[in-house]
Structure formats: structure tokens, C-alpha cells
Image (tube, rainbow, N blue to C red; front, side):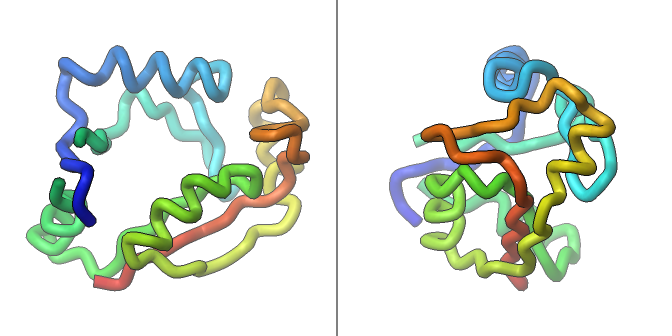
Length: 126
């Protein structure tokens, strides 16, 4: 778990984070499991260069599970989280077909030209 410090997304990082989401997805609205979320209005975390503060924060709030969703093309994210103890919870096949109904501008292909089709759900039980 070394190498990164995870900190809350504070105002000084918000503009950078929103820009990154816009660069990757075209806007700050994202869709997961058929729901639209505006990332610019959500709390979050930033990985800086040592401890997993997200887990500590979740435990302190009484959470029993951390989960996230990424797309089938994002194998770097899958490896990153699997190396930190997250396990595969579900593969939502063809979920992005429904996402495109809510967000028509979503590209057909993602990283390395892989067709964007599925959502991969990972979880960490606390």
C-alpha cells in the first residue's frame, strides 16, 4: 500500500479533478448502474504520492463495504484496486448500452481501442 497518500478531494484539487473527468468522459456527468451522477458535486479522494486514508475514513464512519465501478477497458484501475485488496463483486454485462441512453456522447471505444460495453464492480469488505 505504499507509494500513495489518499486525501479528501479538497477545493485546491477540485478544478484539476473536474478537468480530468471532462478530459476522459467529455463532461462531469457520469452514469453507473442506470443513474446519473455529477462528479463535480460529489465528495471524493485524490491519490497523492503513502497510506489508504479512504479505508480509515470509511471505517470511522461505520461503513462495512467500499465499492467502485469502472469500465471493461480500464484494466489499470482493476489491477490498482485488486492489488489493494478489492475483489470482483460483479460484471454488469452491456451496462453501457443503457448508459448511452442517458449519456449519448459516451464513446464506443475506450483505452487501447477496447469496445466500451461492461461495468466492472469491485468491493472491499471492511
